[in-house]
Amino acid sequence: MLSKRSKYAINALVYLARQAKVDPDRKVQIAEISEAQHIPRKFLEAILLDLKNNGILGSKMGRGGGYYLRKPTTEVNLAEVYRIFDGAIGLLPCVTYNYYEKCEECRDEETCGIRDAILEVRNKTVEILKENTLQAILDTEDEKLAKILEKEK
Image (cartoon, rainbow, N blue to C red; front, side, top):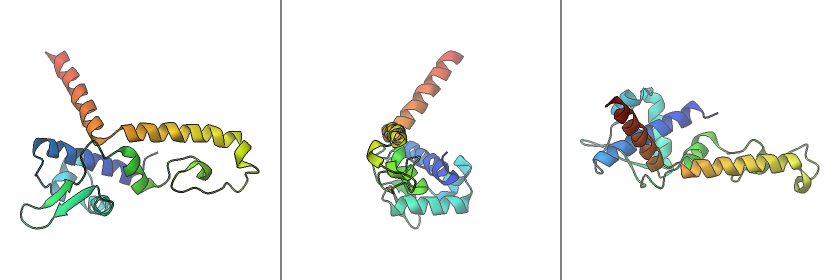
C-alpha cells in the first residue's frame, strides 16, 4: 500500500504538472498546492523538499517564487516517487533492486520458487509504475474527463 507521503507526493506532482501544462514558467506556492490537493501544509513542505533534494522539483524564493518541475512530465514516473518515500518495490528483500538483502530463512536463492514468484510480481509492478509518468496520468485524466463531458451532452 502507498504511504500517505507517497500519495501526497504524487498528488502534488500531478498538480504541478497540470499547472506547467498551462504555463511552463509558473512557480506554484505551497499554500496553493496544499489547498487545492487537501494536503496538510507542514506535511507538504517536507514532501516537496524531499522531491527537490531528489532532483524532481526546483524552487525559487521570493516574489513570484514557488515550486516547479525540473524534469519533463514524461520523465517523472511513479516508481521513482515510490522509491523516494516508501523505499523498496518488492514483497521480499531478496527481490528488490536498490535494497537487496538475502532472506534469513532461505536455503538456496537460486532454486527458491517463492523468490521466483515474488520476483515476477516485483518486475511487473516496477514496469507498470515506470510506465505511469506524470504525463500518462494527465493524459488519462483528460481522456476520462472528455468521456464524462461527452456523455453529458
